[in-house]
Each structure stands twice: as structure tokens, then as C-alpha cells.
Image 1 (cartoon, helix red, strand yellow):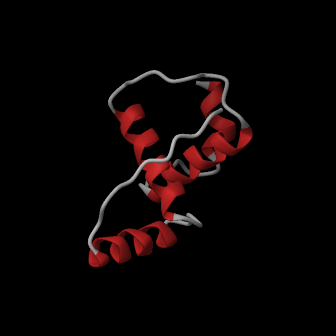
Image 2 (cartoon, rainbow, N blue to C red):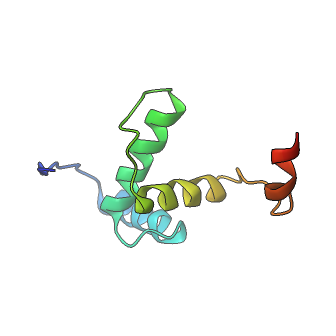
Length: 83
């Protein structure tokens, strides 16, 4: 995949706040956080994307859902299939 540099201009305060949010949500870089936000927004809007996800993408998605409080109790992993 070819990467194209993009520039987002933020004030020092906005950059600091965004970096803090990224760190609080477990992202190592602000760039990774912005990419995750774009992916989450596309998913929320029902925009289809490549279905050949790698394991890292799946883990990131799971973490995003957990940070948003979108999770189910562990016990239901074994009982949901019975319904």
C-alpha cells in the first residue's frame, strides 16, 4: 500500500489534547488514533471497506469497541451460539 502524506493543521492546544486522547485510548501515535477514528466513522456510516482484514485490524476494532463501552460479558461468548 502506497502512503500519501497528509497534513492537518492544529493549534498547539488542539495537538496536545488530541495526543492525550490518543494515549488514553491506547494508541502509540496521534496518526494511528486519527486513522482509527476515520475507520470507526466509516463503519458507523455503513461505508463498506475491504473485508480481508488482518489480525491487527481486528484487534484495533475490538479495542475501539471496548473503549466505547461496546462489549458483552465474557460468559455470553459460550451461550450466544445456543440461541
